[in-house]
Length: 281
Image (cartoon, rainbow, N blue to C red):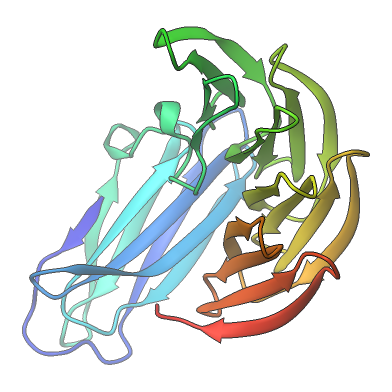
């Protein structure tokens, strides 16, 4: 985590620069959160997701037009190195901090960065926990509170959804752009479905057996038929869609678009966006 101490005045047109390097031998997933700090509360204004191949580096620049801010980094591997630079109130470039691997948030059992649905129960009272760095999910017996086992899925599992009627578990894999479908009775992957670019969220309508996957970099939603395991529609929504909420009674699907600060309302019968609602930052 990087915290910039408060300085006098405002930061007009100031920027915060980040360089991320993957020194590991495997692909790394990174999530970056930026917060505005007013001395009392923090408000998120940056959410960025990226994937780096072994040896690859990336540069990011964010506006920081205020006098205090905080950035948090979550990575799927301990060998990611992050360095940052910023400007003070006078416009002078200063090194804020250089982060070592040991300072980064580890993903552990919570997945890479807290995408909605990272830990979720099933109809059999089994809990499914995303392990982004090891590309699997852990299954826990919710009654006995004991570990059952791990299920290998795709690269960078990021979100999970459950259909309690069919007892199917859907894991969206950010790094491999697909969805792993798990049979909750046997805890085995029965099929893998290719979706859009960098899927992060998933919602399930158990009444229609439709699955909705938000594709962060594709700015769209993949609709999966739970009976055939086929993508039946791709719906364009706002910029950087993330969260999914399904109302089975009305068959309406609500997509939160981080980049455009909107919510797309989808009619599940027609797979069409029927409204776009402006919301907050």
